[in-house]
Image (cartoon, rainbow, N blue to C red; front, side, top):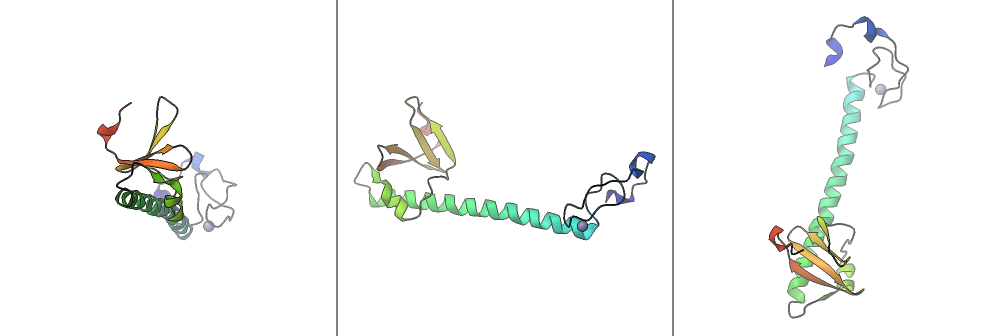
Length: 137
Ligand SMILES: [Zn+2]
């Protein structure tokens, strides 16, 4: 890494920072962030794992939402609308979507990949297939 670069006079100013992994006081160049390679890789592994977990959890919720919307279309195919409780009972997450489209009348269309829904009153939603061409407004 950059540790092999020869030091200029400016680089030799000692730092009072702490290792980003273990918190030890760092001695050496002022741009130093870790005690050693062990601390550096430990820090990056933990950071990457946390980010990966967040992404994985979000994908799981979005996949479940899409699956439930698709099921709902099948179950309620003879009706125009679907009760919100049906989605809630099955673990639908209303906080997760891939797109939220504001309408001129202050309502919004919530999109989950290729399926969208729109609240109709407080208890029911209308569900429909969605593509980039679906955008009417
Ligand atoms: Zn350290």
